[in-house]
Amino acid sequence: MIEINGLSKYYGPIKAVKNINFSISDGEIVGFLGANGAGKSTTLKILSGYLAPTNGKVKINGLNIEKDSLAIRKIIGYLPENNPLYFDMNVYELLKFTANIRNIKGDEFNIALDKVIDQCGLKGVLHKQIGECSKGYKQRIGLASAMIHNPKILILDEPVTGLDPNQIIEIRNLIKKLGKEKLVLMSSHILQEIEATVDRIIIIDEGNIVADGLTKNLINKYKGKVQLKLELLESEKEKIELLSEKIDNIKIKNIRSTKKGHTCVVEYDEKNDPREKLFKLIVKSKYQIIEMNPKSDNLEDVFRKLTKSKK
Amino acid sequence: MNNIIHIYLKELRSYFNGPMAYIFLIIFSLVNGYFFSNTFFIFGQSDMRALFQIIPLVYLFFVPAISMSIIAKEKNSGTMEVISTLPIKEYEFVLGKYFASITLILVALILTGVHLSNLIAVGSNIDYGAVFTGYLGLFFAGCVYASMGVFASSLTDNQVIAFIIAIFFVLFFFLVDKLLIFIPNTVSGVFQYISIDYHLSNISKGVIDTRNILYFISLIGLFILLTIESLSSKK
Image (cartoon, rainbow over all chains, first blue to last red):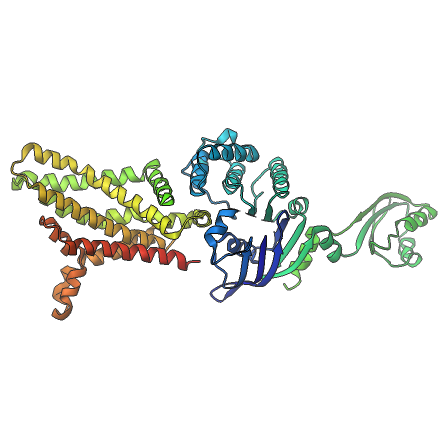
């Protein structure tokens, strides 16, 4: 379990993280989002034991990050941003070195090695120089190194950067599987990826937590109105404008002429879905409906709203 | 202790997996060999004084060069972040790195054994005691310079800057007793005492004095502690 209370980190006069609070329970997969420079990586670096907090308390499994740093580092697996690796080692040497430091030896090492090779798909490159591996492989090597000791807590800073779509799906499935028994805290710039992988999202902006909750709850809480795109053949602009007078709580926007008719956007609240009435009115007007496509806000829209508000 | 060995072996592998260690060792051997053999037959003396005089000078560049990358490279490549989040204590990390750098110095000194074997082959009445203490002094001086190099490397992520800082420290401790004429008499004794050359020449004379050994060990300890402190303070 991770508990953060009043955590701040200053780099000289720059306040990277300002008095943040949150907690994460075991078995949760949490996405940590923020724009570049929002304080996301700084927070993850503090949790990994790389940086010390300026103020506040951080507890991991009841241990204090400053007093019990060594004990915490034993139970954490950390993949830093940009995935730095020893390029002059081969994959086996790196995993062996990491396992040695973590006191995993003999048969225990062989079992752990087989497991991470299988999970991260490294069989073909085990004795290859890391510097010669592709970016996707390097990412998986970093992940394998972070998982060799079967950590209770995984902190992953941009784990899918550089992976191709197939590899992203593999790593997503792996993280989901790991999340059943471990606490996983991951950051990513690929918001669709976060949306598909995690249960809960924490958004940080300019060093402050601006949102924290289940992904679907956050989207529901912060999303705006539904935008329904319509394309109607043999239609008249004036009559389209009149639709908003016949149905309550809708707004007709962006009416544009096409070769055979018009397109427009109908804006409405999700709880007052007007599509049935709208359909009947359009049919009554003898227009032909080519397109009727509602678009709700997704995580990307929510993220932009929450992180752009002060800029 | 185990972690020191793991870091030490990783570092040694890093030295010898690439060309760096071989280049440094070849240059070190060639430079020393040239100056030693140049005067060897002229003086016609069965000792290694010429070698023991040239090595401290070669050290001034050799040791900063082999130690400049030892921590700075980890910082520059970002691997410092990975290694700092493994369950390793700072002193284990620093000592593992330090022992690897002094191993390279030891290998360089062993390579000069070629000259000793030549001396044994052609010389007579060799004072093996002086040869032993000469090597001992050189090893200690190398260890002191390496501790300065490791400290310099912990201060920056730029290897060139680390090299320059290390040269500054090394030159200071090497030159300090050569500037005694500019220093007031009341403190000249102190400056002489902190000079590496002063203690090195004492040992090279064939006398193992605990004061000299203590001096070298104290200086090594000081710079190792400074390195650990430098890494801790960066958090």
